[in-house]
Image (cartoon, rainbow, N blue to C red):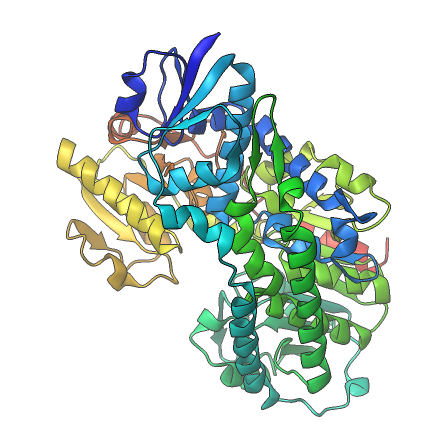
Length: 614
């Protein structure tokens, strides 16, 4: 038995500890008595993913007053709001940090259970790391070498701002609603056309060419449908970062595709009336009450990881995001979209086909639920980009689909865009969606790229940024440190995310900002660098180009090529330098990742099948 075990986030502290095993919280490191949690996650990623999915299932079925959490959060018959809370979704964008911390707690519990020790020493230099551990770990054998400020310790125990937060977001929703009341549509819905196909997406990734709507989501499928006699209605959720006001978007939609027979476009969340406003407020008040009286009151038992010697209550690390999804503006919009889709679907032809962009977002669950309840089961979900290994929105515990009620509402058919996606979903064969291969509409452009031989070294590196500013800044700081230490003879071309603000990165003088298309950048560069959250890694990887993924250990590794053959990841500048030198000489070939064919025969076959109700 060891006298003690140390939990730290500092490599020097870890190396100088000789009284027992060391658990390193946030660094990749290998030594006999030191276990790195990020490395443990990577080496045991299937086990950690399954454990998290089981925890989410256990929370959903946890019984309080003879009712499960799923039942307590029922907002319509057989529809539980649990699946669209931040934790129920475990979505990696807005709450990626808390989900990553939860994964690390799962690892920490497993590592502690494997060891035989008398006491736990906690010496965490980073205050954020210390806050996570301090708030979660419970036991009589814990000694802190570093302490949180006194106010930080008592803040979560004695201060509750939930009611104030609810009131602020109610005001926000009132302002949101006032904008939409101006655009109330007085047309009689009974006069709407009976369409063959209704397509649902978000009003972004498109361009207009002579009033013809060209979608970055649907590409060749849109062109194919335009040439048929099928009646197609395009339903868009307004996207506020679209650089267009709501009013202009609504008016513009009326003029899209006017030369194409039986085509129309609508903003689905364009209007709100008093009944719908009151419905939303009523549901949010119910969710607020359930959050306080069920989730928060019983958090010590619901949000628990039980170990042999210690236990972890992780409510503190997910409570902020849970509040946002239960009674923040995000929750108001979730219920508003829920209501919009219910009213929309009640007015439609019962034989119509539903096709939507599938990211398992809250509105998609509502769409699938109401479509199946009121119309039919001719529902196709299309994950339009990639599915990373740790994108928990697409993965569920097998036990969840053994429940008699309150399962997540998934489409009858899931359109799979490539071998990588099919392989990742293969082990989840209990999902109720039938998986059918189709072409990767967003990636058919890869056929346009005629790769030249890389024998002529150009000395150019393409650095691709992410939508999230902090992720990109960490990536740029990393490259700056690498340049300072190794002084490589290479020109670094930076390609920001299309929706990013270029001025946020103007202080990095070593960058040359790209003004070319992605195709031009690919043909002009030798080596490519992405971070561990951007989907652009898949484009480069599919082409078989020299690619390094910077693995930012502050966040969950959300790379779409995590664990794929020939994928190269670097966590520190020395590993990055080795990979850089290696890739300059390595001959790579294209990888089988997407289904590419601009004629889209698989899409055509699928639509024919569903339209015939087969």
